[in-house]
Image (cartoon, rainbow, N blue to C red; front, side, top):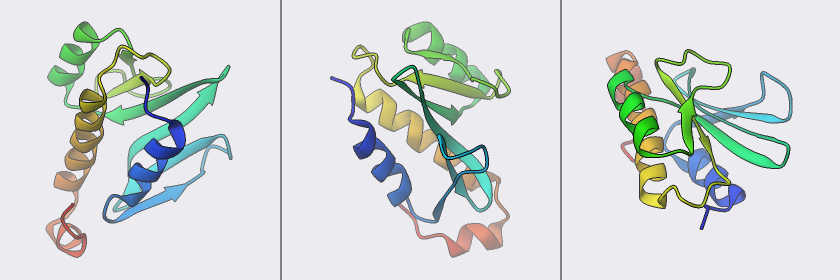
Length: 121
């Protein structure tokens, strides 16, 4: 069963150091860490989707393994995946691992000084 969108958004917002913004309008929730985007959530035609940063090799593996995972919507398709959250076939643990992976990629790319200011999850 798909994760309810409000629960997913609450979990994203609760990660340490995360800031929620709406730079693309009220319909797109943008989650940032240290000023860098790690997740974007939106719904189109009542189909919620989540776009996450991903290692390029892992991005391809996830796309091949899960039909709900596609190249990033309106992003660099090599480094971003978009997940169809209405697809019940995607296991919750895979989704949460993708979210944590995106968060970790951005965190590691931040300057050490900024990383030190963010509590560990």
